[in-house]
Length: 214
Ligand code: ADP
Ligand code: ZN
Image (cartoon, rainbow, N blue to C red):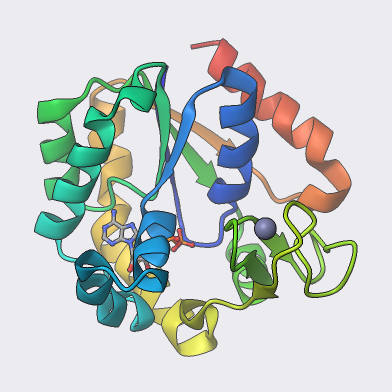
């Protein structure tokens, strides 16, 4: 199974993606996380990407497309994958169509105020990348990852100025993908305004139903 998770920054798609890949035993490919790992390891790719990411801009298409194309060639993608954060532009979607067949695109939606609240309270683990939230998905010990014990932190691009820019970039460059995949008959939509911490089971049941109905 090959799935694309679409949706505004802060909608929670990374959190849902983590649960989806466990259930269907497919690979979670988060382009944002790959970039962050490369920045941490100070690779050439990381150096290229950092200034764009910190400013809330998109990394240039050529760089991102090459990276995803290489990643999807690897053996561990054979069983299927979920793309989280790619494609984010029409040129990326056109490129993807030349090297992969996608089964479905899930557009995750939430109300605007909820998106802002999710983004501004988000914390992620420095070591394993798991996402938490200071109100909605608290760690058992403040500042410590429940999964691996690593330190959690707020991403630079989750600070207010970058958040504004990312939402603008999403509206301009990524939201056209909704119509793009609708025309291809691949689009499925789901609105999730509930608190994941309190309603995890019912939220995930709705998402799994949507996928199983495909
Ligand atoms: P979110 O979905 O919360 O915005 P991500 O972790 O998916 O966060 O992405 C963080 C940043 O990484 C983006 O703001 C962007 O700069 C860069 N990035 C991730 N995926 C892409 C992509 N497909 N194309 C260009 N830039 C990307
Ligand atoms: Zn961790």
